[in-house]
Length: 452
Image (cartoon, rainbow, N blue to C red):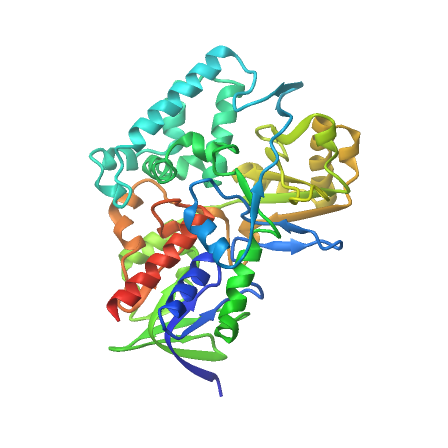
């Protein structure tokens, strides 16, 4: 016989949204059961420990200075943060040429720099006209939502060449999907949710400014530990049935009877759950459309961060390469040395099609060219193709195609009977970030506590 548990609330998913919702509900004197399909907590945040015990992040890792919700949660559970390493020269590879620079602006043509700056000013100006809580009500929402991000970049005024390639890669890194299939309104909403496009692109003062001691998953692990027996791992939810005064959440081996449910899985995974009553067509269209794109993150681990002594920050870029963007992701102690390498969208898919040995060679050849011969001999090489992860299917967040946000946007957060929704895709402030996931969990918990 399947096991049956009674609780006030059943939370589906143990990423930061689900863990935060469960924590706040428990603090509000509600009994909670958390069902997680994976054999670990954290969701799109995945901390792995190396053989020497050092923690590295295979998924989300960075926090911005205004990410107050995740910083608050970290303080609650006694986890510290530290600054991402930025000292030294950054590198931009353009064909056979490698440019060294410091600060935010690479040494490309002054015209390219000016046109990028003007494009970013225009983006910020338009984004300020997008209401944070209801972006679909912006005066020009229908116009902006009918256009794609690729359409706007083509008409942005940014000069063709390395400048436009760099800008396109940076925006593609935000969404990871095909920019022809990403709503321009969604980009404006994302910018509004973080304050400026520069914040999204930046390390110092931006979204990549801070890392978490012990890995970003250490906060999730401590929250889960506090929840204790409320956590059930390796428990993918198969169905959610609603009655007049309860919901039944079923995994096949376990049924949870609760007053409310909070579903925190990525939108594309929600359609795999059998709902009774069934999800209306508008919700199904939203969740089927809100898909995350291909993104690969490769951690290249060395005995020490040798590039620092050589005068490099570890921050490099080459649009279209196996290492489109790299950052120094070493632990706070500085040992071991860790380079985090990213590829996005079609570029990630192209390199993923290679066999592992060819892919490793492509990454190490690129790093060796940029950082010198010591880059050719890592002690560990850890790849994660996020769109191939069964319970994720893409990172860093779902992107919305043209026409979806204005038609179905309100449904992102609107409860479906006794089912509430969380996840960074449902967040306004810090939309798409770890902080957004935490904020969404707090909102969902508040909705239920307010109804009780």
